Length: 252
Image 1 (cartoon, rainbow, N blue to C red):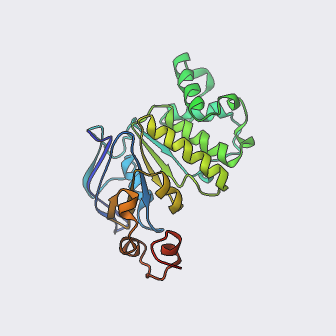
Image 2: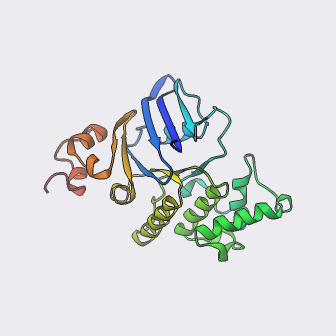
Image 3: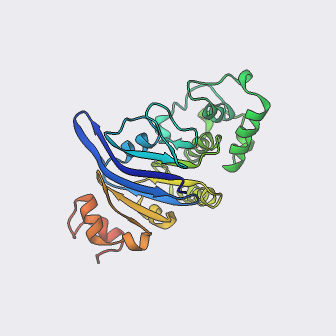
């Protein structure tokens, strides 16, 4: 049974059909790189998977259980872009990670039992930041911020992990370190969807790549997807586009 199944998904927002006929499966231990231009529907797809949007058609299942709009599935972990978090808020690393155990609002430290804190510390250990658990979140580097958000998503041991542009604003060594972490999580059995504009990272670490522009243009192993015609259709570019040269699909 796939960790995630999306069937014939369509989403309409403000009278505009943002997604149509989207079909996608993600297996446990698989990392799917979700690639497409701005406005392609990547964030809409993730929000739909989380149950935050009501589809116009289609179904979404996690481990065979249907995702209901307005009822976020506990087996889904979401890692937002780092810039979406208020890093000046006066709280510690462990307190931020602990918010992943609560669907609404923040948890007071005194409300967490021993078992809950064990989950928090285990998640911090998985991202190699246990020693920083008492540090104020405002003192973290960009890479550390991203790891903390990943730990918050991992605290429930999700079947599916959604990563929204995890490499944005990070230097290359930090990106490489995060890529190693994602490979480790994949090896641990998590199913991962990674939305990214970093095409080379996506091709390097994904087991499959899905090209999205309102619908899935193509999906498969990176070697099968590195075709100029598919990327031209997805990004609406010509054969002379620098994008294709960067990915080695055409000669400079």
